[in-house]
Length: 202
View 1 (tube, rainbow, N blue to C red):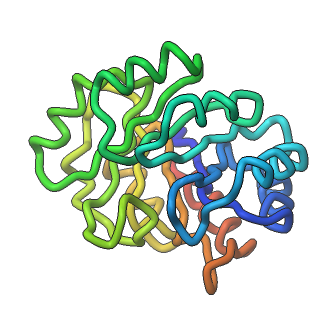
View 2 (cartoon, rainbow, N blue to C red):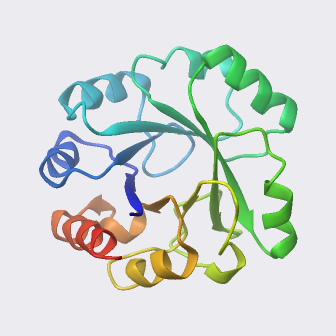
View 3 (tube, helix red, strand yellow):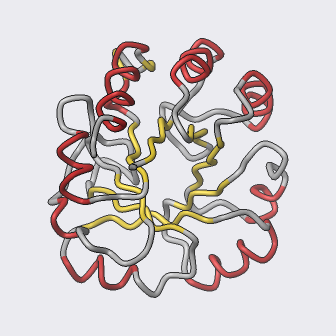
């Protein structure tokens, strides 16, 4: 069964929704974004979050020591910028948490290149000039169908299309950010619809 990640939680109310609805993962964004939170905010949100939900920290071109300081808050580290292979190897060694490497998909070649990346998971996202992620844009899911490593699928997923995406791409986990929001904040009803849609796929 495809797992579900709700990314970009910023306030206690949204953590409360997660505790009710129990996605498999939530994401805290530490990169420049309207969803960005501070390490101090992340500590408080983690304390309020059910321990059964795993936390992912989203970073863009961040220095490794800054990520290392968040080891007690995070279960996984998601890298979404221009970091190279040497950075990924050093990150895994120094931080000691599973690493998700985001890959922006423009063509089949981007997917092939992802096979060699030294990460525990790949996250396939749309490629948009609007930013590194959370842009609400989709890409052709068939490009990642059959990818032989566990991967997260992101990019414009919402309650209306997430079941189709899960069937078309068969990801390890579906990752939703803007599709679970209304006016820039997480919407409990949308979160519930998304989680139900993913878990209804067989």
